[in-house]
Image 1 (cartoon, rainbow, N blue to C red):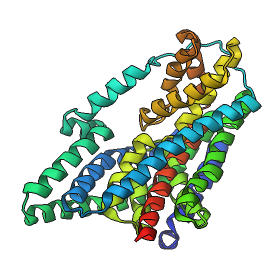
Image 2 (image 1 turned 90 degrees about the vertical axis):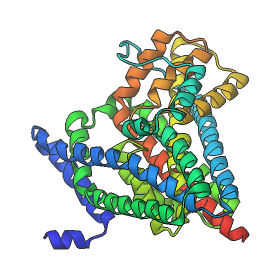
Image 3 (image 1 turned 180 degrees about the vertical axis):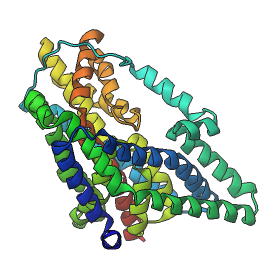
Amino acid sequence: MIKKLMGMSLITRIFIGLVLGAILGLTVPQWTGIAVFGKIFVSALKAIAPILVAVLVTASISKAGGGLGPRFRIVVGQYIVSTFIAAMCAVLCSMLFPITLQLAQAAEGAALRDLSGIFEGLITNIVSNPLASVADANYIGILFWSLVIGLAMRMKASQTTINVVNDFAEVVSHAVKWVIQLAPVGIMGLVFQSVSESGMSVFSTYGRLVALLVGCMLVNALVFNPLISFLLIRRNPYPLLFRCLRDSGVNAFFTRSSAANIPVNMELCRKLGLDKDFYSISIPLGSMINMDGAAVTITVMTLAVANTVGVEVDFFSALMLCVIATLGACGASGVAGGSLLLIPMACSFLGIDADVAMQAVAVGFIISVIQDSVETALNSSGDVFFTATADYYDRKKK
């Protein structure tokens, strides 16, 4: 049986784990030990991902040739534009289908962050201790120091040293492949935990809010992102999109962490035949600034609070809210629930009291089992989708 299972594709095995986890969650929710498998899988991904990013980016920069610059401009442009479009889509949908909330409970432990605080945090994280960045999974710090060390190696290191670093990167990449093979069992544990704890009750209590959030995210995933890709590569983007959603989005949906999904995205880029020197940098970068789902969450939740307290939002305010949501989303942490803590920042722009905004954060955490899962699937699959688009665009030009 084990041989037959291992002979199946990883996606097939993940689907089996998904179904099995749902069945067990509904039938034997008291078997809480099953959830341990999910925790082990996510912990293993989170443990190896910072090391993988550090060595891959360093190795890629140390041996990179010319021509990466144009592709980076394209992929960063896609990340920022798609996030802004996601915010605009959220504004439009929120106006077409206005939502109000029952704000009764205060959010505990949610930190109010204004825009200046986000930028200050970003700058501080960039120059933090490189070893501490790896230990704390501070990906913006990892990316910065890997770029610096990679450039220094390219200028001063011998070819032997560069080869050693590249060999180490290959070793870590192979270890990641072993971890990814645990995905079916891990996702079984994650699905079991979600189903056994929440069941379907989240739909009945906050159904319209969940539907609006998920609807906005699906529109961005299935309409606007493919449109951006088509305008660049001038060919049908949907085969690539569905491959990214299947191989990256499904895993990200259950891990609910763009950072933890980096190794999965790296492996998918390899299977797609993309340039390793390029995707080993663009994927970690995307996990920080490609935040379509986060922009949707921030915008929809902020406008829901505005509707609840009777704040009128005119065209200019809505446009500025899109800008703030885009900038804030780029500063959202790559872990579960990262975007929810930025809701008070956007609410403050509309003059909404912090205590009221914190209650919206609490509502966000209640529905996060669905909202954060879909958000992460959109964000993380988009990292590969836009990376592949930039790579294909560069090849087309050549």
